[in-house]
Amino acid sequence: MSKTAMFSNHKYIAFETIVIKEVRRFSRIWLQTLVPPVITIGLYFVIFGNLVGRRIGNMGGYDYMDFIVPGLIMMSVIQNSYSNVVSSFFSHKFQRSIEELLVSPVPNYIILLGFIVGGMARGLAVGGIVTAVAILFGGLTIESPLITLSVILLTSTVFSMAGFINAIFANSFDDISIIPTFVLTPLIYLGGVFYSIQLLPPFWQTVSGLNPIFYMVNTFRYGILGSSDVDVYWAFIILSVLIAVLFTACIWLLRNGRGLRS
Image (cartoon, rainbow, N blue to C red):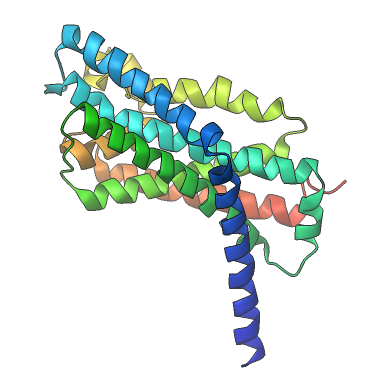
């Protein structure tokens, strides 16, 4: 075996090890990581979908329950992809074990990809369970499986990297909850999960257009229902740009050791 092949094999082993560790981390405590978000989303289905939805009637040409299901699935994927990476990477930083990883011969992009895939795994796991719950509450058909799968993979990638950046700059466990509470949650709720943008005045429609989560939710809704308030192709461009920018930022932060080396 050549030296190049051996090095590539070592990189794959390092990547696989990080991913397995991340998956085992959240699956070992599944009562804390997988069950609570599913219960929360289930309550949304009961309260907003059945009780409130009966009074609202149709939204965007669909039954209200059918309308909010894509948004609730996407919300669970976003929150869990983000929280898995931010909590895991900050724990490594807090325990000083991240320094050992950084001085190892493992390339920075392998370290980053390992944590990203770990965050995606948790986000997609919760999203899959929520989808199963949605099927129990009513029929769920997917109009475009390719778009549905593509947007959920890209979205979980974006927020895994966002959680990674949050963890790098966090100095305490309190810091890892500030962004999800004061930035992420408002953006999700204002991202068209529970309403159509057509109900908003023109000014607020323009403001919603500045929210990237709005494009993610509506593109995912298009994949499931076949209807969206945004141009799907434009949404994929936004997702691609976000991934490129965040990936570059993460690599730069790892290379410079910002907030990582004492």
